[in-house]
Amino acid sequence: MWIFCSSAPYFHLGYFLMCLFELSDNKRLIHDIQWL
Image 1: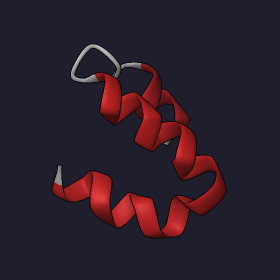
Image 2: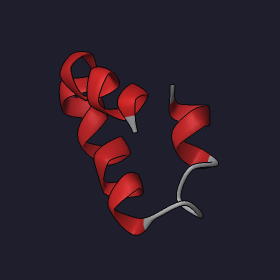
Image 3: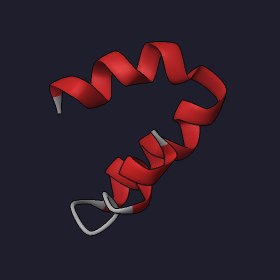
Image 4: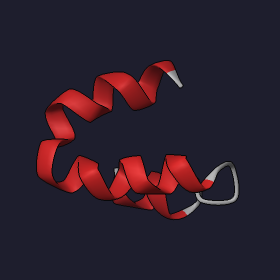
């Protein structure tokens, strides 16, 4: 998932922040990120 987050920043700054949060709550955010 980290690789996906690494290439996602160019999409949106907020998206990158979500990836950082995902490290702490990757189970919940994975669902949110998948929808995004």
